[in-house]
Image (cartoon, rainbow, N blue to C red; front, side, top):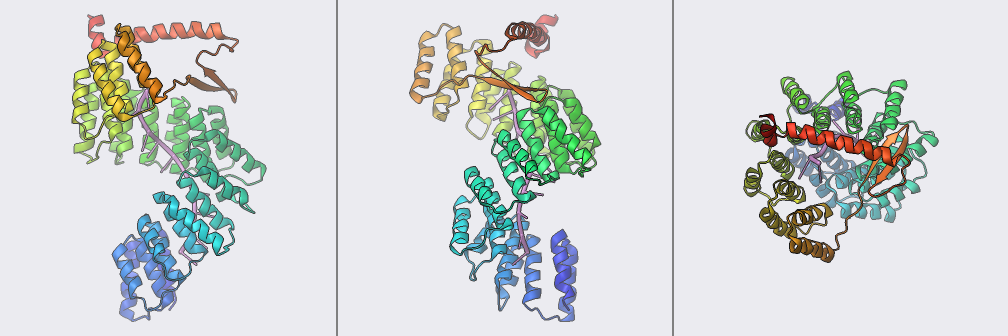
Length: 493
DNA sequence: GTAGGGTTAG
């Protein structure tokens, strides 16, 4: 008699919707008594399937409901990605929650970024004197991470009596997600010292940290670690590895890793296409995109962002426009501001300032700093002071504190002898408290990071660096003259 | 019934 809930549980776990339903039908036919145990399993199964109404009806019709019934519904909704529904059920709960309930609702809070409710749950844990052991502590930490409250996540981590691989992974991935990759690697080091061995989940976050830092030597070491310890490659770890090599500038290794993978999905393709696009391999990106489509992988918004970037970096105006249309008409994807930004940047770089401005007027949202910056760069290239002044008014409406666009604007006015306009821009910057932070870049050689700041002359090879830089600039200028579709005609004929 | 990971314009 109790085989039914056990089988249903198995169906819920691997989400065998058809089989679960069929099984349910058989049991109704046989006339099995729907006691609490059976009903709870059914509620959980249908909520896991995302069948909101049906699972709720079953739940409402139950003559008696215990804490497991409530938790079944909440955790099922969480599994189905119905986080708001899960949180709503929790707020209407009529019995005392237990650890299982709290863990589930914390996941829900994290996924919808409901920091208020997450904190309230933490308060409840404190008030009811629940012991914050591994599972609850890890769930709390992850909730704070997902709500980007790193300090609170770290505090929970510090207060944990014991830490397992999930505790460490939570804090490491949290730091990576919140753009603190250096600190993430420090925690990764502490984790190894503490004797907890990382697994593929931990290591995919570590690859992401390396990608943000451009730490290719560290990334290579992690790659070796994966191979040495026989850690299984899945789509997640493979994708972060491809992304790491791409962001660290090794397109070759990114491609090599990509081809070694057995399980690829749209994320993997996006990492590769983005890497190729970033490094100016536009044709290769388009070629791989074709392969992706032929393989039956459906592109998403991120894919098209990579493709449009590829077109932008290679001056492929027609191709970019076609892909932009295809995105909307063939794949029913709605372009975001970043897609419009890419198209506008593409048009600007190719010298089509008018078309770019038309697109700005056409798009359904206000231009952001990125777009205004692209337009300004185009204005600078063709010395269009009037359009620049126009853009200034947009910029003031945005209330942005990005110094780059203001400096660019000021430079345009200066190079066109519009001293009063330039002074006005500087006054606006001063009034808004916008400061220009010195630029810096970081590279890693033999595992050691070197930072270069603007105006810093501490480097012993300063002169050699400048000599090489000058010759590179010359080369770029010459190549640019041949490449640029607008000027190319002039120089080729 | 209960915790962790990957891709996003410059």
